Amino acid sequence: MNCKRTPLTANVEKYEIGQRLEDGFELWSDVVTKGWIETENLVKIEREDGAIVCPYVKNRRGRIFIGVGDYLIEDEDGTKHVCGEDKIWSRYERM
Image 1 (cartoon, rainbow, N blue to C red):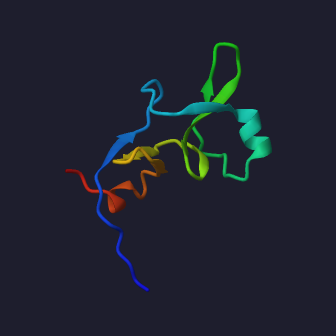
Image 2 (image 1 turned 90 degrees about the vertical axis):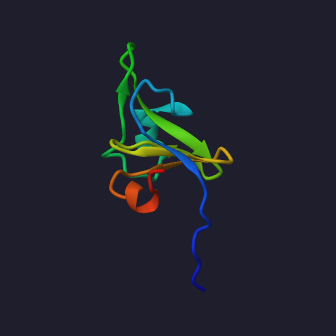
């Protein structure tokens, strides 16, 4: 069955440190040792105490970690997603 995604309005922001767009942070060491994700391109922030953390957003699938150059999308219903800069403008159009 072929389907077409229902149009909806979403807020799209390129992720930058300090904008408070993320839902939280996870220690880099925990991301590497506990996750089944590609860690090479993740945003890493060094805190004053030397701890390195990675920002994430939460949705029904769990924590979605933010990569370098990623955009954060928040749908009308508040659901958050992450999309790479290589795909964002083929999936969303500016209004």
